[in-house]
Image (tube, rainbow, N blue to C red; front, side, top):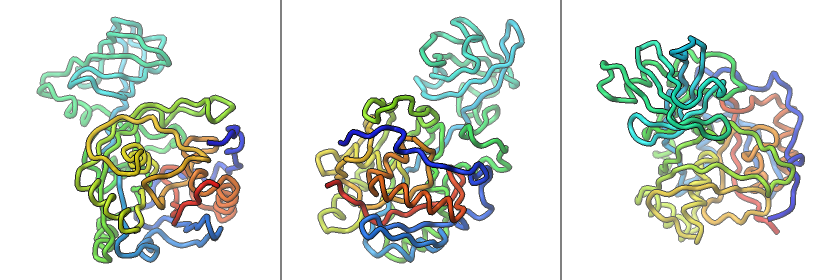
Length: 352
């Protein structure tokens, strides 16, 4: 690794380029195709992504599904309004949650929801977190999923201030395994038709699961990159994905991660250069100087300044070229962040 300050990953971003709403057509977003080795940038449309792929490429997607995990209720004793964001389950009815305002929710407090369900605070944790026990209304049949489907809201990132007209627009079309508090947004550009086009071309589509945790909303608060501690997230690699990726690497075919969460899963489960199937937990932190073992390319959105995600991109492209590419995206009026446009990093620039 190299010694880099967090300020090196800052950039100027006009507020009007922060995408507040999704496009009606998922694949209508723009696509910047970048080659960090040749240092080239090409402007295209995401619906043309197949043009930049070849038969034998392996695309690896994160199929995690977002929980409608944001809850609004009132304290039973005072009627004060509170918000809970469920972040991690400990079973069907016990969860870790981020409370707002946390000072109102001491141990023993109860929050009442519109359907008649309640949340009981059973443990106070640092940084506004609470362990809660759900007391579900009878009509949910003891199912937290049924409760969240009725009462919960999608936990959109804090920079999005416009309500979604359709809840599923913050889900990928292939989302399958419920457990994330934020969408793996690089995959939001894909449609069923586009996925079929890629299959027809001979591109392999494989899936992993990484449940995105609350740390995705937390900024980097240290000055030196190496001092930052990543949050822990659960992942699973199916055997068929491990087999496909290992074959591709043995045959010198590209393994392309769709999103930083898929990339972090592959690099975590393949630390010895061979992708291992099965579940695990990862707090891997990727920044310039990292030696990639499993992936050759990345499809990703444009990320927050000074975020761990833009640091990961700089590890693939080099810091200097990353700054150039982001400056070009701003100059060309690309849409940024979760509902924004996309970048395809066609190959990695290994550290020297």
